[in-house]
Length: 261
Image 1 (tube, rainbow, N blue to C red):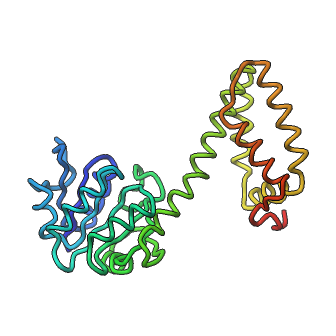
Image 2: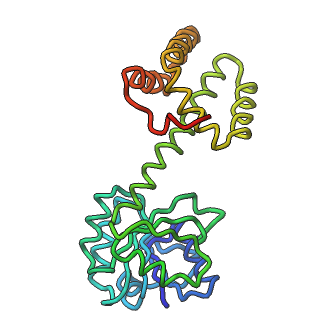
Image 3: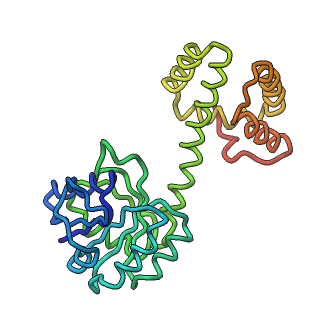
């Protein structure tokens, strides 16, 4: 089996090197021609793709269409093209149209690649999803089949981003506000203690507690606004929190809010 990796940035280089370390014949291509390539380099994208059984595109959403179109021209009849770039479900559907049946896999990388390399958790959908997982079953990878529909892996990655990036944004805004009050050390310890103590029950409590006490919590957020206005700090997250509580107050049901604490 020969795998071509198109794009040798941080993620591409780590995944390529990890696959090679597991004994895979890997060839890479990057128009930037990295000085210290982790695997042997092809002179052109065509050369990298032409003999590959599996092609991994690890570039960016903005380059993914061009890369896929070029690769489709040179791909072997039974080869598989896998797009690992972050993109919308509709983009993945468009990319899949360049390839024959069982020739495309939408691969969503679900955690940062550094530290995990080729073993990073990846969700796989598209017409070639099952084929990809079967082809790589003897390697030490972390692939999870989603469906034969391109974009369903991408949708899960982007949906998770609301949670992951949103949580990070709340913590940052909280620490900025604490800094204005001279309480940043205390605030950091509070948030770390909260994360240390969090379990599945914590999530249930967030959902059921907000459903039961949305009005009371909305009043409390008004007090937060008043306090922050006295410091001059303009919160980036208080407004969206108030909007969410307002929707709950006006009968927008919280999914799974009936789960017991």
